[in-house]
Image 1 (tube, protein in one colour):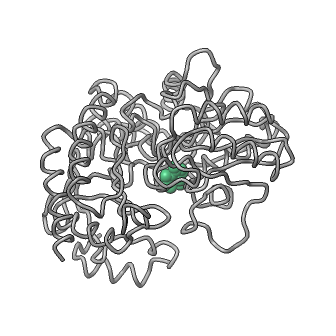
Image 2 (cartoon, rainbow, N blue to C red; image 1 turned 135 degrees about the horizontal axis):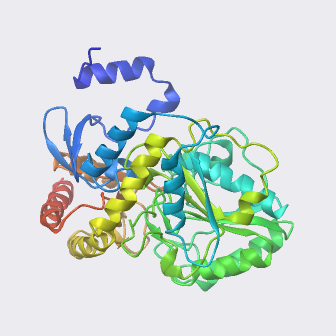
Length: 434
Ligand code: PMP
């Protein structure tokens, strides 16, 4: 089979043959063609090297073409690519055990493998409703959870909510956004909002609440101390289960621990994961307390590709590499070094209203005016375009399209910090000079 690598041919075919639904999400004015990746770097079709500060949308967790992951995948492809859960295979069984072992001790954790984060979120919603016998759920504004009816139904960002009728019995509460949240900074007002929402917009009996410990697409909105604990108490008092969406914040990205919820000292009932789990191989999982899964055991829930041995072989290798290469610590220290540069950028460029981050989850929020905090989407688009010309890959995100988001692979190193800071500086100075 011949493959034409020219950008024009790719764009032409994409315009002709990709459905409008799939080609709409193109971030750059001149789309970027990615030809190869190694570690924290990618190369475009002209051979230019870029620093991948997004891990290809957070999927590349331990680095592009990591030899251990590649070897595990190749080995499994050579032996057996698939067998479905109708038959048995040791690789998914081992991976389930290893994933369960990453959860807080003292609970009996079980795993259901899916093919994507969306599917895992959908399943989590069904499980919460089934296990509790309740329908009402809480979700956060400014959240992103996926694309199906279920996952879109709990997504609190307008750009992703289509006008097609949505899942019922979902109430949205204000996200505890410390920069532009409707109640200002703090934790308590956002917890009171949960109380009010349960009291006024639900039956009073909850199936659960779904929370990203760090909102990803929403623009790295970090749940403040005490928020998860307070939310969990309230949800449980109303009979609901506590679901954390670790699709972005999981696998060490926050630099604190394997999971974003851990630093809050809480134990969820259901943990949803995907993206970084397979270093780019499609895979998702719901990890939950045993009793939650038991509630749906009477009928089948069969995902043909769920627990695929190739995907699970990648997953096993990812967990091993994170441990062997001490990558959570790396995200903490390198992320902290990069954050110092982001703070100094903020001092120099008036358009930067806020910089924030935890480990390798980082954001720069652009505003027209630091007092009013009015979002600056036009300036963001220009800086974003410039970052690519200066050799960086990142994302432009948030409901107001005014946030630059960076979540690099866990292997980004201290040697990358200066080049990234300089490239960011050039990107902002070019736009400021216009
Ligand atoms: N949850 C979060 C927090 C996500 O960021 C995403 C994907 N961006 C999803 C769920 C859905 O995952 P997927 O795209 O694999 O279906």
